Length: 89
Length: 364
Image (tube, rainbow over all chains, first blue to last red; front, side, top):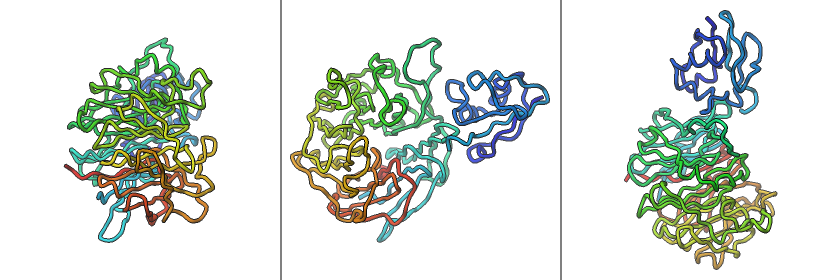
């Protein structure tokens, strides 16, 4: 199952342990995480479901290609990192 | 007089208190995070702080114990944007620009960039977009002034009748409701925009009102610092007359009105829109006590060295006595006056850039 890890910066606001989550795309994996941690959703996505402008996602080292749809494929052994971009601080 | 000031800055919320003889920083909250709006509800004593996190979006925190502990509350958020909708403005909250008490227990108003007005009737437990304003066709004409998108910065709630609300939009004019936001009327007659082509100068839908404040004792009186001048209304915002006597300039953001004397108001002028600094590098406050017939230029106690401090629209406040004032600048200076602005003294700290400050009204 893909592993999802969040920037430690988020620990200031809420608990974000590294978790394993089911899903074949970044969107599906994140949705699975948010089901268990609903407050986290608003920190990563805006209210229209788009990735926040200054948040970035990597899938096993590959930068997210589909920032709008979060449709990048995720395999069972992938590690998904949700990080703050260096812009926007 | 109020002995407490809440200061929202680019890097935290500062709770200033007046002790036996002098002011000091009582507590700092959210250090490092941008605080865009702050409110203390006088009915419940609850504190609210709106954060505009650079990475993680708009957040709203509330404290029921005067800042000892905070809990996150739902932030105002738009409903899903309908597919295929032709709308020039995003359905996302970029920042909470103003928070106001609604005048009845539990009611709060939030004005936001990108132009959404939100209302809560459960003390911030949930928020509803005020669709009656958002769905007005005139909103398509709104545009950003300074910010990328239009924003609601002023929500004036009539203390006599809490359903009577006046809203200021930059750039979208003056909007008035008599029924708690169910229906809206466009005010602003008499305001004009130098920045528009001649045929649109008096269009009330696009006026860049920078800030609107309401006299608590005579709420029919409103003062407005507009992009190109100062305006005054005595009919709750329907019609306005320009005040041309202000000096040293007519541009600025902030305005405060005396709580019991509608003739008295304070402004902090800057050169002009493309040069947002004090005239000649001299920070001064302009005060009228005769409804704009004349102005005093107040500088005693303000910097006598070159000063390029700009006072944002929410960063000038007067307390309930009308004698104590405070203002905070984009370069972190904070000044207070105990005598209606005749003399000022600098708060002994260099704070981060100041977005907003307000006196905390004690629990009723």
